Image (cartoon, rainbow, N blue to C red):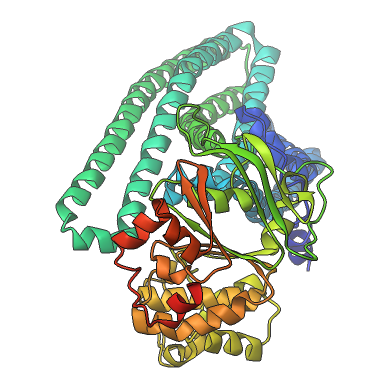
Length: 620
């Protein structure tokens, strides 16, 4: 009951300020994530302090016990020392195990698991708040590795400090106190050893810290390389690049091994030096004890307790050095994770951000300028465009003209460098990102599905949807029939089947139809179609075109397609060139002008449509 009660004291998922940037120093970063459990850590500290004092006192009791054996007669030993022996037995049999059990319970049930996962959860939440460009600039595997590893590293930093260093301090103080009460000559070897040990630690720690950071960095690079190969395994196989991928991973493994060896060289040298210091301490202490005992200045028990304390200190010194090494490996992990995670969010909601409401769906780009942060790279230059409520607009242009950038800016995946974008008169910079994206449904060219069931993927935009609504959306997207025939490696079938990472178990067309079903179910008032049918063959595209027409009814639509036939029948076409609008109008009007759109159309031989095609006739 008590253990279960302890386990409920810390909630890893307790509400927190998800957008607050962690400090950029190791102590500040660790303190930021340990603050919610500081009370538990303080309790653990005092219980550890009490347990350490009891452990150290055992050596003093041993000296006392040896002395009373040496000075007492067997017949009178119990009569003269019954109270002391009883209290010593109670300390050993009751107090010591109770404190040890309480310390382990607090550590294992209260602090370690909950703190570890609380830190992972909060760093994950903060990482999720980063902009799209943040994720595009790094390996997904490396980011996941840093979020996963930083929890144990921060927790170990606190627990090791409380447990290990506290114990060493208690034993060192006990030894110095005992020796001081006997003779300054007995204190001298221990005092000199403490100074030398501190000097060795001061030499070791900063170097171990730097080398541990290198080990952690090369480990993350190695994991990133491996994950990158696995994630893009189809490309690796298609281009027969197995040898090159092996070479890349081998180079990363070699770099990690070299960093590890460089770190262990320091450890080997430090451990050898420490062993010499310990040997000198044993001989010096034993010599001082022998000299003082022979002069009658020390009892046999005091000598035994003193030597036992020194041996315990020596045993702990190696343990502490290894622990300190592990501690600074954790500091290296924290530094590495901190450098990645503790960056300011690129796109943040304003403090007074409101929820976006879309009663009509009017979109206005007013003097929008954006260069991806590079002034010499023109992407969008002074774009002004108004899309009426319910209007279906197509964006046309060569690759690099800025079509996808326009939709990304509408979704506020990047902040504008100039101008503003309004939806029903509301500046999207002044509304919350979540509310903005809830009102916009998107089907992209690169359809990515989550490694979950078909049902979960379709319901992703509206998790509360019922089974009938999910099936209806799948039928509208012409996906229902192939879904019923799916079965994964665990025997789950139909809508319960898992799709694999990024949907790799489905064909491109199947993934695209699942994505379209997801958008149909979301039913947002604004719709973005970015090459929505690019992965479909002509027969399937024709089959679901009617579903897309139904989907677009009553919505404001912004569509991008390289196959101009797919957007020729829209209300208006906007032709972009180098981030500027160079033409706009309906299909037939733009053909008659003979400009860029007409040249693009001619290059596609009529956009793969004959003059008898209904879509072409409607466009005309």
